[in-house]
Length: 310
Image (cartoon, rainbow, N blue to C red; front, side, top):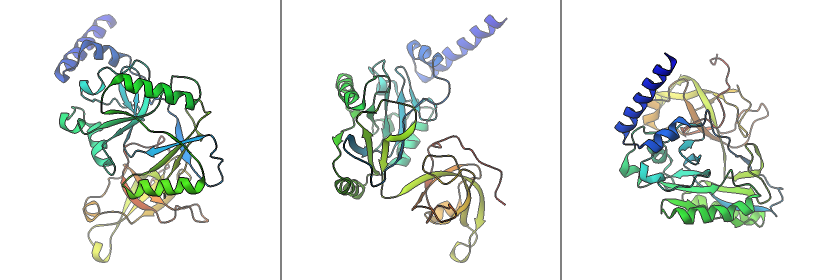
């Protein structure tokens, strides 16, 4: 009976794949999809005083983290990305780590395109896969850069781009570079230690350089607005999730700025995850000047939270 059920399930999968326009090779790949989120290298926040001697610097692309496991494309959280078949045709059997990117300032468009269960061909033609590492290549990052550039060249697709890496120099030069990128609509920079191996950890081997810090929080309630916001949302009541650069998990605070009138009329629902921006912490550990940025593509870490806000 177990074998019969297995065959029935396989038949159903084949039918679904046919409806999606996928081939038998992709069906085999779907059956071998990794369980859970891929083991990715994660970034900490750069601070002055770090020795930049052995670091490479590149632009930080504001998109959706994409992991090619050699057969299929996944998000950081382990969700299957249903890109059109032509988008990943000819990609290598070795894993690639990068960002699914729609351009500077186009995070919402990138996130919407990546999340669709039936791919929007026109939307995907505006996407790029910005490749910045090869997790299974082995060796230090400086050597992996050469292998990555060779792999991208061999793919020969204009939407697959090897992220440009240059040597970091001084703190002052780094800030100048970062402000130039931000002024042009970018998010910031990434620093990668040349001697580092690819490890699924968050440490100083990978650093992000931004004019502000951001993190995620779970919406736990809504505070009614006053004055011009009467009848709308005044502030989100949120709870911090576990993250490498956020407030302590379980910390409760309010986010009352950064929201548009449309978002105040139709606020993020309780239980959703939002990204907020802040500038350091108060003595009590609360993020200073917390401001709403957007709905999070997916939490940086599992949402470890307590119960509702009092």
